[in-house]
Amino acid sequence: MHEYLQRPEPTGRPPAEAPRRRARRRMWIGAAIALALLLGGGGLAVRKLDRSSGNGGAVSSGKAPESPAPPSPAPAQSGPPGASPAPGPSPSGDPDVLMPTGPKAGLRQTARLDDGTVIAKTRLAGAKSGFEGDVWVWTPKEYDDPRYARSGFPVLIALPGGNGFPANYWSDRSLGLQKAISEGVQAGTSLPFLVVMPVLNPDDKNYHDGSDIPGRPRMGTWIAEDVPDFTRANFRTYASRDGWAFMGASSGAFVGMKTVLQHPDKFKAVIASGGEIVPDSPLWQGHQAEMDANNPEKLARKLIDSNGPEVYINFQIGTRETGRERMAAFVQQYGKGPVRTTVRDIQNGEHNGWHYVRGMREGSLEWISKVLKGPQPAAG
Image 1: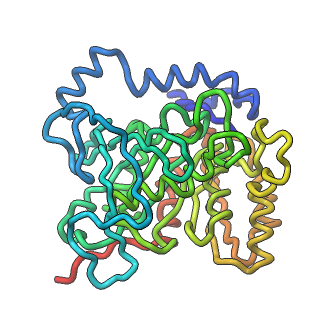
Image 2: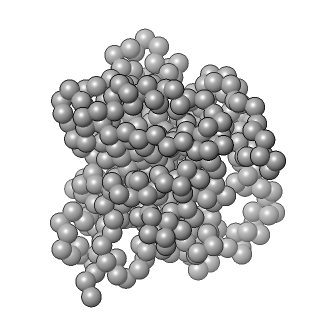
Image 3: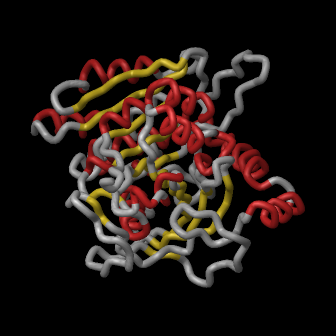
């Protein structure tokens, strides 16, 4: 399950298949160093970039800062369910629209895209999980368009593979996720998603399957409750599950799929890339019942038996990676009733984020955009 971020070779020759899950744990340190270099570069280069692009500056919704600002003195926290709405325009027409509840997070720019949109980061102290970690957010340019000032926006929670700590690699603009969405909006094949990118694990030593493993940080609650609460506190969203979905790679795909099946009343769909189906964290030892409660196969069976609300799973798999047989077996056994499944083959695709974004460009973004609810411009 634990993918390391592997850049496609320029020759087109596929790199050697990475060892399966537990063997990949040995690669985490090297992967973390590589990712840090990719994201950060040398200190002098980073400081120069900050001065020229606004990195480090405060961000208001999706707008880029005019100039860098000093760090926020306090971490951001998600608002309690009964918090008073922040000042702003009222929703018009659609009772499903939720305006930001506050308190407002201290978001600071980490990257600027060519279209002027920015990726920003904040520190979130999860009120329900008790876990504190970083969250990155990208808002499409449509979010600040006055025509959509009273509209909700669909949320795509993007989860990384590998250790998913201390960074979420979808916040690295070089992967092209945000650009793919923007170009899809222009082409009419994608909704303008709010992309929310939390850390996946509490450290770089153990993976937690995005679950509340007894005696461990409550990462299931962090993903399923604290991160959505933070999003509702700061952005215009939808109250219904029609505006909420996941995407993920490798271990992040497993967590996204598991969370949708576990909470079909809150989330509607997931793009799951990389072929991971069942929980297998070593931290589950001695907790079989709790592990079963986080197993997508058992959750899907429960949803089928109860004729629960429909959920939508779009699997993506590269033709140069293993795991398709696991996806096919899941679809054959559990892709029925309310569990709607599709499988997208990425030709010459390997186990990495660049190729999964290509699969999204080739059809998965259009698929999920047909499942979820988009923003509505004001009349006139």
